[in-house]
Amino acid sequence: MQERPLFLSLLCIVSFVYYGLLILLFAGSLLFRDYFFDVIAKFTEASFPEVTYYLLVSIGLLLFTTSFIGTIRMWQLRRMGFYLYLLASILTMLLLFLFVSLSLWFLFSSIFMLFCFWLYAKRMQ
Image 1: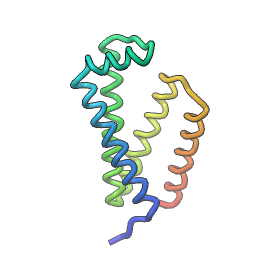
Image 2: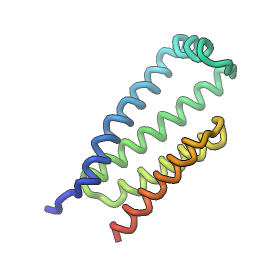
Image 3: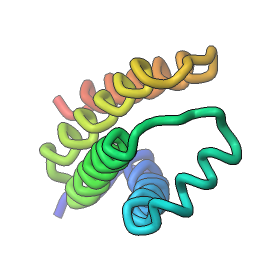
Image 4: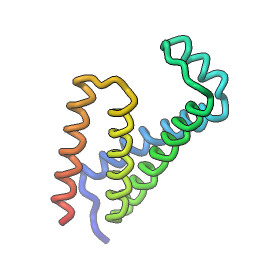
């Protein structure tokens, strides 16, 4: 049996926790829409139709679930897991880029994330 590299183990453990919590949060926000709408209204000036809310939360839930499944596959040392994780991460970055105000932190973290993907892809070859 092939041994999992330390960096991959750390990435997977952090990803399990991160995406697991995001999946719970987004699933909860679908179930308890009124509560989350009140929280959004309290802390932001954002106002959008209910359909947009469900669409954004559903897309987020789909992307985070895909990342979680990709993480499981990477933990099992399957190459397809990397591609699922990469696809979901790039789509998430693109959606954030299109719909959220960007900051310098977002730009640098995205570049760092893409650099890590590139390093891992080089190592897979």
